[in-house]
Amino acid sequence: MTVVTRWWFVRHAPVLGMKGQLYGSSDVACDTSDADAFRSLARKLPSNAIWITSHLSRTLETAAAIKAAGLSAPKPCIENGICEQNFGDWQRLSWDEMEKKDPRAYLTFWESPARNAPPKGESFVDVIARTTEVIEKYTKLHAGRDIIAICHGGSIRGALAHALGLTPEAGMAIVIDTLSLNRIDHIDGGLLRGKGASWRLLAVNHPPGCPL
Image (cartoon, rainbow, N blue to C red; front, top):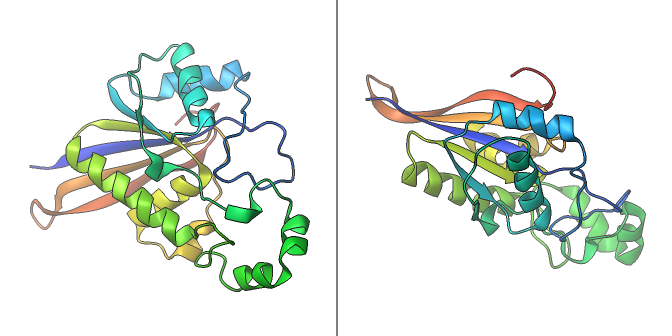
């Protein structure tokens, strides 16, 4: 028997007051005023789904705005593992400020930005690892269900890198806009005459206002 578990990833609403700054895992405010975008998402997302968010307020507020736009949804489960990348000492700084703060660390980071971590922060490889743990846990616990994850650009890239078997460098190259919809399905029993499991990709960086 083939069991399909459908993942719906939505990046949070646009943040406020952080233009040109790397906010990372900082808890910053977001703008949920785009009613049309939230109505579009509410129409696209399934009503009978498991909901998860990170612990940051911008994902919780985005989930609440989708629900208020007309989608029946349960209270989301909070999963720290799908939080945005922690950039440590560089959070809330511009790129120029990061370089001035520690030129040597800045140069070292850019030698391998997918694998190196900022001072007191984590690497994108770390993000992939913890995001993968959440995906595997929920896919096992809720096999055959729809799972909606309201999270972040970094964790969505991590999820896609895991599902598609991408290198961290290739995963970092994926563009994930705010309020975009991203779809992957886990297919258990679809290979080798019902044995094995695989992933399929259905949508990446899909704008809320366009038909899916």
